[in-house]
Image (cartoon, rainbow, N blue to C red; front, side, top):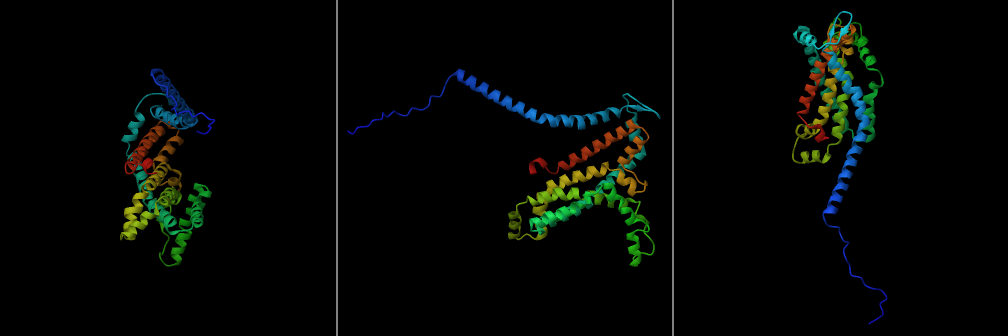
Length: 316
């Protein structure tokens, strides 16, 4: 046999500690680790939680509290009474104002959905170049570079009795005299709402459409589906999360807007936001708070109904 200077040591696996003591120590270390992670999560969420508590939860709680207070012509006083809600629900003006609010929200939602879906569909499926998609999308955002009030008021000289719209229609011989309903009417209010809030429908729908796998559309065409069938059976179902998000944005913004209704209706119409604004102007803060609570509950109920159609957290 030849000379072999090294000693061959047989392999022995690393001994794993056994027994009750080791199990208890391992369990304690695991619990400490999970506790530290749990604590770290709370510490990371604490700053945002404090901000939400101070600027969202506490103001809402204060509004609810004030809604039960009483008020005179010159002062308000702390109390716990249901007079504000009783007056709110027994007044026919309340139901008329809420009907106007729902009417504006529903009509605006329909038009913004049609326009927003069409624009998003064109950008997502007909514009092939990413550069052109970005450029056209930024073009849609140009009106947002100015104030909402300026964009809204700019419709007044256009729709007025001697405005550009009536002058053009008269010069073309379409009408003989100016149309009175173009301005200071429900038409002008809804037109301003659609102009102001259509982009809130375009953005989430476009974002959802860009995430659709194009192979699904190709598979639909390969299986003999027409363009309309592909739209209704593939694109629209996959776009539902974006539609729901845009609907929530538009409905909540329209139901809380009162400046647009005031200016574009010529103070001839009102919504719930306008009712709250009038109460605040008259220093009737408890009544305004009660109306705000009812409006908040109504909006939350509408959002809950919309979320029943699609689970946004699961779909996104």
